[in-house]
Length: 168
Image (cartoon, rainbow, N blue to C red; front, side, top):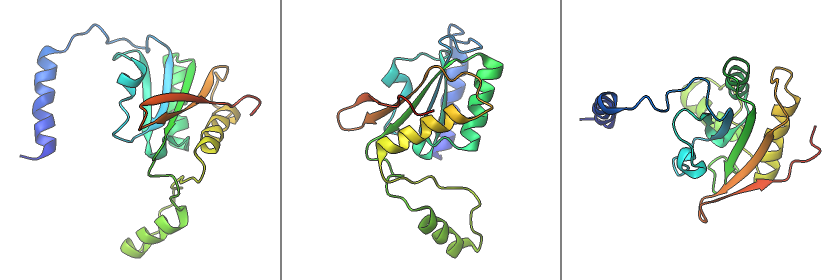
């Protein structure tokens, strides 16, 4: 039995026992979180969120890509979220990852160069600020008054805010 089969069976148990208590739309806390997909970060536990309270948008590095913006715009315009938390973390696999080297490796293997940016970065706090700025300057994001950036320290298991005043 594959891992997917195990989780599929778990979903059947969940469906039989799940409560509708948190099945709200839109998210009750009106919060959208953009975070790295790293498995060491349990965003719900870290923030004390319950199902139905926030949208959590995840990708490699917590990058504010066109697709992350698309999800955020839908979250704000269609589902009334108003606050945005951007969460990056220490010991991220994207830290120091070269877009060119990564793309070259894939191209050497497949014969096709990926059209998307890998979004590797060199300095963590600077990348958080860049991510906040990408949200603030995007013309499609309507609610920008409460956009804040954070770093999760995976060793200390603590979250701290990155100073982002005056970016836009």
